[in-house]
Length: 115
Length: 115
DNA sequence: CTGCATCCTCTGTGATACTG
DNA sequence: CAGTATCACAGAGGATGCAG
Image 1 (cartoon, helix red, strand yellow):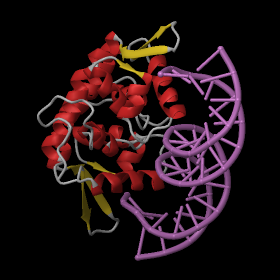
Image 2 (tube, each protein chain N blue to C red):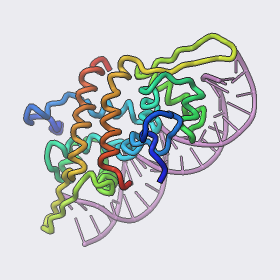
Image 3 (cartoon, rainbow over the protein chains, first blue to last red):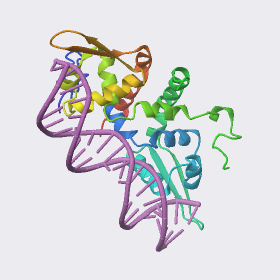
Image 4 (spheres, each protein chain N blue to C red):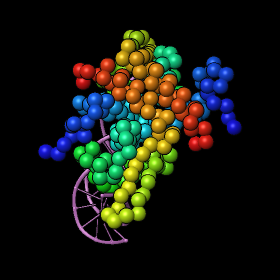
């Protein structure tokens, strides 16, 4: 496999697949970050998330959640009951991302006051 | 009106306008993060950035840089010479974001090996 | 070299109606 | 309650040519 650009450091010309870009791909969706944020606080049900994100439609919410699932950031627990109940929570991978979420929140609060 | 998600919640959840979303808005562009990354290493010229980002067109690069400029993340220094020379660098605000970039890179390297 | 203007494409997002 | 299925659309991204 090709050497990553950061192996052995120096020549900044050596770019392959930037890890920062990998992260970017995961959080690229319009609602991804905020969803992760809400799930970092506690497990949420589908409807709960929809209420938390006032302007999101069910279709979009479903898709964003599915993509986060595919990236193994979010776990989907289905309870076979009537009425249906589904709970979303962070996977270990998702939980490992929480510090970054917090960093982004802190950074925003500290530096973006005026916006 | 519907209860906001932060009404009556524990202190740790009290957010006015979710700051995480603010951050999201800034780094939303497809190339924003990687551009910031490259500028975090050192000041770069326009052409240099374009070479670093193999598949980006001039128009797009210009637009992404302008948006970062508008968000005061990037500083644009124009040298009135012939041929023209323009250098891009991080503003103090942009520099304050570097730790988060590094966090994202580290996180990716540690957890996303397989992807 | 840098970058703007234009046009075109395509993805993501949003709205709605229907289903188990 | 928790989706799925469609359709429509805005906007981001991309290619190209021209200009300072």
